[in-house]
Image (tube, rainbow, N blue to C red; front, side):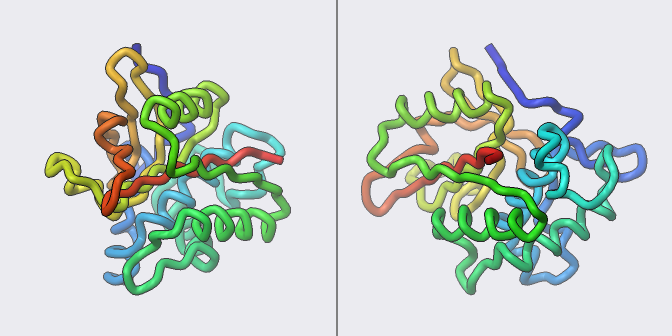
Length: 203
């Protein structure tokens, strides 16, 4: 059975067009667009938290429902803290700390949890489901993965917006669309393959 976060709190509007979250290619600079999945995911998570948790309202300085032109400004503000390197943003600890630093600058305290790499897929999926059930939006990084079906989602950050417990899948927002991914296929942790989940909690 499908369980998802509030779609209205995820939607970014471009006139009459509804985007399911954000697209890293909304960055004007080409390099920023290519490397921007991390800060874009952080921008969506902070916007979402501002919408659903009153004590997090300072995380997003624009109006709701979210509009693309304003959200693009928010993306640029987040990127001042969540800065990818030449190879993108591949460190979950840095993603967590830099997003929390952005929040502190806005007067909001966020606590983060990074799921241990030694966790099995069932344990990790359970933690993701629990977070979504609590109204939180986990960040998923698939760094390296053996499945060719996940090539478009590899070396890539995404926001988890729901799950289907019976099918063992997660729903993610990336490229301003919704996708459904098999979690056990995404959560591969033997060398050289790697994935991470970061969950932010309002403090």
